[in-house]
Structure formats: C-alpha cells, structure tokens
Picture 1 (spheres, rainbow, N blue to C red):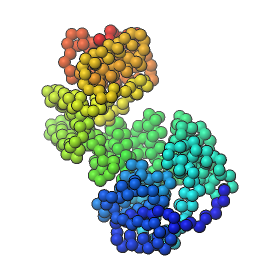
Picture 2 (tube, rainbow, N blue to C red):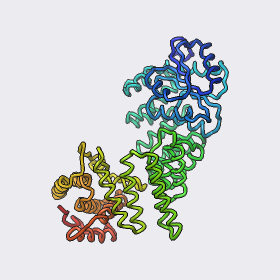
Picture 3 (tube, rainbow, N blue to C red):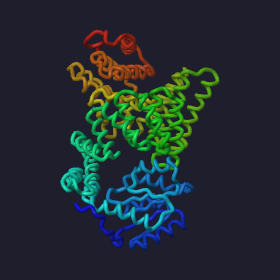
Picture 4 (tube, helix red, strand yellow):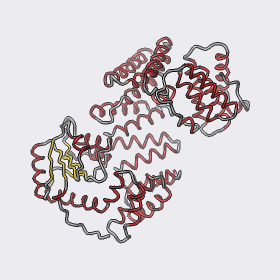
Length: 537
C-alpha cells in the first residue's frame, strides 16, 4: 500500500470547533477556512455540546481546554469517551495551553487522535490534521467495522491488506494485535505483538503483548515486560494500570497498590484510577491512602461523568475501619465522620434509592461495631424495606461485601451468574420454596444448583435464616474439600454467619449457628468429611 501522504481535500469535511475563548475560537476558525473547510461550525462549551456531537456525524472535532471554564474541555473529552460519542471514524484533536503533566496525561486517558498545544500556527495545524485524516482514510474499513462492532471484518482488513514494506504496516500490526486481544484471541495477538515489539520497540506493541500474556496466564512474563516498558516510558500510565492488574491477579495486593500509588502521583485526575487505589489501599490496610483517594474522587466527581455515591460510601467505610483501633474521643469523632460522609452522599444523590439501601447496610455494620445493636437492627430493616421496593432489588450480602471493600468471591459459575427473576419483590413464601429446592439439590449432590437456590432464597427474603445458614454450611464444606480459594470461602462462611446473627434465632436454627461457628473456629482441613449437618428446610 502506497505510504505517501495524499493531499487532503477539506472541502467535503464536516468540522466542529469547540472553544470557549472568543479570540482563540476566531483565530482557529479562520485557520480552518484557509485550509478549505467549508462545512464548519464553531461553538463554545454549553448544554448543547453533547447533543451536537452525538446527533451529527463530524469528520473532525477540535476541542479546546481552558482551565478556568466551569466545565472544561478535558471533562467534555472524558464524558464523550465515557458515553461512546468518540467514534473510531471521527478525528478528535484536543487543544490546550496547559502543558502540566497531570492535564496532558489525563487527556491521553481518553485517547484523542491528536493533542496540540495552544497557540499554534496554521502550518502546524495543517500538518497534524493532514496526518490524522490520511491515517483515517487508510484505516477507514477498520473504523467503519468497529463503528458497528464487526471485529472479524476489522481483523481481516489489518491481516490481509498491508505488505511488510508498506509505511502503514507497523501500525496495522499494532491495531491487529489489539483487536485480536479484544476479540478473545490472545495467542494470535501475542505472536503478532511480540514480533512487532522486538522490531520497533513501540510502547503500544509492548502493551498489546503484555495484555496477551496476562490473558494466557503468563503473569511473570507480563510483569517483566511491563516493568521494562515503564522503565523506558515512565509516563506511560496504561502500563502502570496493567502492571497493577497483573500483581493483583497474582495475589500480590501490596505491589499492586504501590504501582497505582505511583500512577496516581503522575496522573492524579482520573477518578477510575483513584477508586482502584482506594480499593487496593483498603485491602492492604493503608487507610490514610484509601481515604485520600476517595476524597480526591469526590472532589473530582463534582462535574465529572464518573460522579457517583460510591466514593462517599467507601470513604465512610474507611472511617469505620479506623474506628476499630480507636477509643474515646477519637472513636466518637470517627463515628461522626462516618455519619457526615453518608449524609453528604444523600445530599449529593437525594433520589438514589439504591444508595439508601447500601448506606443502611453500612450504617448497620458501623452501629454493630460500636455495640448499638438496636440502631444496627433498625438500619438492617431499613435496607431490607427499601430494597424490597426497588424495581430490581439488590443482593444485600454481596452489596455489603462490596461497600466494605471486601472481595466478592465467585466460587461457582452458578453463583456468579445467577439471575434475579424480573420484577422480583420481597416474597417470604417464595423464599421458603426456593430454599427447599436448594436442599433437594444438595441431597442429590448438585452443589452448584444448591448454591444458586439458597442465594435466590436470600434475595426473595433477606431474613431467611435457614437459607443463610445453609449457605454458610455449603461454603464451609467447600473450603474443607479444596484448598483453592479456601480463604475466600471461609470469609463467606463468616459473612453469612454474621448476617444470621442480626436476626432472631431459636431452637434448631440457634443450634445450627452454634455448630457452624464451632467448626469455623477450628482448622478447616481437619473437619469431618461429608455433610456437616442436616440442612434447614
């Protein structure tokens, strides 16, 4: 394929210029006119920008960033990426006079086609636009296929339309490896990316190769490669993200946390990365780091598309964890901070009923921790009541684990993928029936189905003690019978027992709970084989 850059005809291009500075907007407008742009619209950032982008098929969008704007260009870029408005076939140019590392790296997170510093000359603008539009013309079949999610066509084009002597061959191979990874073919992607990396030492080729290695569970090799990339390209933040994931996949949460700390110090403006840092820091007991990450997420989220109640709840949970080692006035102050953070979440999201469920669960945990069982039980009942009113009720057990920063273990595919009946409401009678089905499956030796039905029973009625204790027993037996994920399974046993403690137990239920607690306090590998007791119907 001929690698020469053809002369670009701008007369047929639809161009949108977004710039809040009137003088800069006028200057760039006349630059574009002098390049031959006829179909040109110039606007400032306002409420009509997002509909303008989503409803029209622009060939080129030039987006200006000005730090003093109430809603900045970088926030608009992030939101367009988040909402899928950045189409592969469109050419996005991010324009900024802010050369700070944090702004540049945050912009790169949203993957514009080009980043240009203001002010710039018409020659520089023409050079950048010519290069991008030439590349878009070459890879138009790929972009058109990706616009409709047709990965096989995009892959076929990259595989079959470039010879090794073509100027665009190297880029076609990088794109091909990335597409193969996304399409679930990591072995093919690894072969292509490895060759391309050793040929060009391109960082994107290296990242593609590392992603392939991780998908193939070749974690040690992936970590070594990512370390090499970071050493050579210390501001390549995507490599930090992937390296953190590889450490986490390998069970080394401390190293994963250290990598994200480094990444957020270099690029602090991304909320998703700050939230990952908060979660890892919570799990590794670095509560000061976790609290700082969640506070940063709340601040950044005021005008971001990533604004959510999540960092408020996570921050309140960090304060709860800090309370565990506190006494006297310090403990009281931390309790007040927990309550105030949850109030702030309510104020920021007054109509979010799911937030009210999650916050009530967390408050129940907080009050149990300080010994106020009456208030804890009230919060639990509030969570159950509000959850029953939701159109799609939440899995309260899993939500509590999630908001407390614990891993939500997936022990069997049936548990991970169990479905909630559409429009399911609080239904104690149905909960009892479903629990009995779980017992029948257990007696037939069908453990995945038993787990599924006991889980559904707790979703129909979160106060179904029999189902909670049955789940605790199954996870305990599973932990005894296999070392794989034993710690996670024992954590689930403890969680279901703790949930049962919040409810009124008597007779056989009380005996069952005592028996399971007794077993949990011993070495699980030494427990008797077979069933650890009759399941409760």
